[in-house]
Image (cartoon, rainbow, N blue to C red):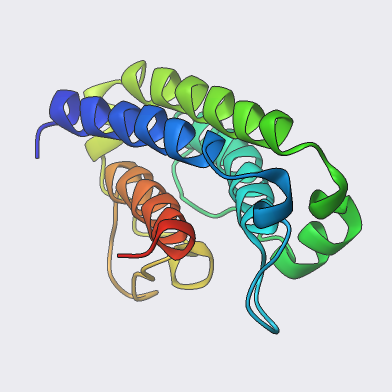
Length: 159
């Protein structure tokens, strides 16, 4: 899929997701299956993912590798107490941050996106890992981020 079409679909995912999320009550968003994240915690995790991947996407444009620090996702969700935040505030932050990421991605040069990177740690930090011995691109990582986001929205909404 060409990048323009990908970005259009990404923005549509954000806008549609925002509208659907706003239909949920705060009380419903605070309850989840046993030993699983609630909708509030999933959106909080997606905010954390946006924050971590924002800096990765920016840095990747002026470095030769795709090696980035990871983060303890469960600990991030736990210490930020997303269940205690107002639901509309979480939704708006998630949507706005991701629209900014769409802008960041749209601003990337073709070379930054498609340049092959032999050194990476996408075997550790990507949602769909890339073998340590396989070269990859920023384009792959960007698309992987959006697939991760859609996966978590599907957890909230169902397939």
